[in-house]
Image 1 (spheres, one colour):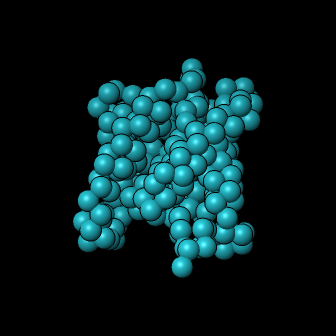
Image 2: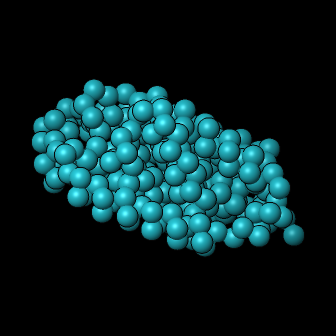
Length: 220
């Protein structure tokens, strides 16, 4: 969850952009395909509940300068970037109802705290799929574990740049309260997402929208 400070106009712009993004996502989701797979809503609801719990368990003192397991890599590899962003919308709604994020910060939290990590994860996955061997271990370790750690690092760096550029926190504060702890957070982010992906590949590979069994397991 991001912190805007006392900037209501910026919050309004972010909210309008976030609503526009959600409208686009909802209008371009292949709902017919989801209806043909009746168990999909269970995975979607489960992901929302689990990641909501992860986001509520954050560490930090100053507003906006805290760490939590993002979990977006697992969601994106499971359901694709559109449904992952939609799931993040539900997650943020739950976090807001529990009083952990203000109404003014919802828009910027969706854009920078949700859509941005999802986009980073998705682009990293596409590069892995196009450039590396189609092997289950590559999928789990690189597209899952490494992808999640890099996504956490990129998110924290962009977030830090945002705070410094907007004058919300100075560079020394951002370093002392956020960036110097980044290596400690990249590993658990990778482990949580990597273990989830490993479990799905092992027991429910057909539910992973980004995992092509014909390609990765050589099935005909």
